Image (tube, rainbow, N blue to C red; front, side):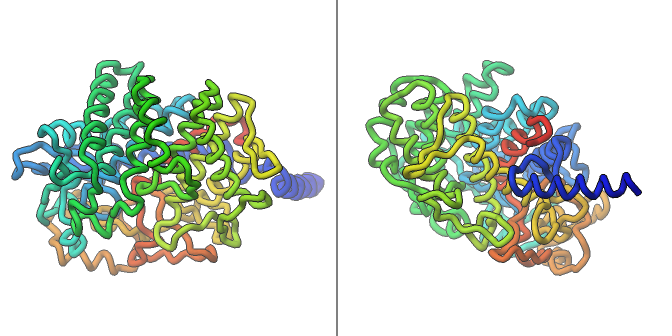
Length: 496
């Protein structure tokens, strides 16, 4: 009896402390490590091409083996972006950049998963290298016609929809997708610099060439490719943000002063003077400012003080009680920016909070919000609330990571996961016959372990409904920044 009373008292004390200081947590370091492992495993479910012998998600099979063949180029490999069977270049490149940035900043906190993380990055960069080097002055940016693909519900292994290939060239430019590809290759070159120097050098050399192509032939790929990429991955923010982002990553990877000069000369026309409160596959401005603030904090590079100031403004916009606060949160405390795939903004924001906190902490800095200052610990606490919400500390008591926790989404909007696997059902399941599985009330037969889906609405409500793609569809760019955030918390003693 005394033990029970002591236990209850301890629980009440823990809850009280948690609400005040976040020193007690629903999740342990081991929980974050489990979520980290699963967040990386998810990428194996998105693979296109020939799967390796050590493929862990065994329900997947080879797919897209003739991608590019009709155009006499090898475009086998890469990732499907979300729940369909199209390889979209812009989100794939951003995914790769964010996976690489996760390892660059927090790789030391994922010793048991660093090999798997590098493998996930390399699956992306191997494909991007093909896309960037197959044909001179050309970048291949997409495989698959999304308008036709979306009219079918079939697993990638059975895919028989047209595998159209789309490219950007000097005549039909795509500075946005090209500069993001350059960013991905440059960031990945940092990851592989010590473990595979020759591969790293190849990545950086190609990044510079692709960036030069992006900068020399300016234009948006949305204008060049129209309905092939819009409305799916239209470059709504334009291409200026990607040019500055790409240059910033090559500067970080190479320390080549010509890219520093480029940033200094072009920053003002590419968004450095403006505050921006979103970071996504489309809009890179907030991420660029945090990335460049490191140079000011570490080296007092005067030209980058502006980026530190704007990073502060971005951070302040997220923190209730500060003069610059303007973000919207659900009653349960989740950052809310969009009705469709909202968790993509939560994972990118959490990553930037933790990365900026790392930069501040390493250099004794603080964020300035009007007349007040905010410490790195406050940023970490805010990120922790978001990460914990995704993992199940929310009003619905639902984990929004598939396969993590006791209760997680069962009806994920994902063709490969929802249709019986080729091992369970070797016979072909055609385009239209697959729709019975889209509309089925049964749980997905193949668990897409680690997938973070779109998430709940503005009132913390979530319908576990395969038809509600806005809430139930996963995406590589939701998971990629989450890898870094989970690594951070898995590496903290007691996860505090």
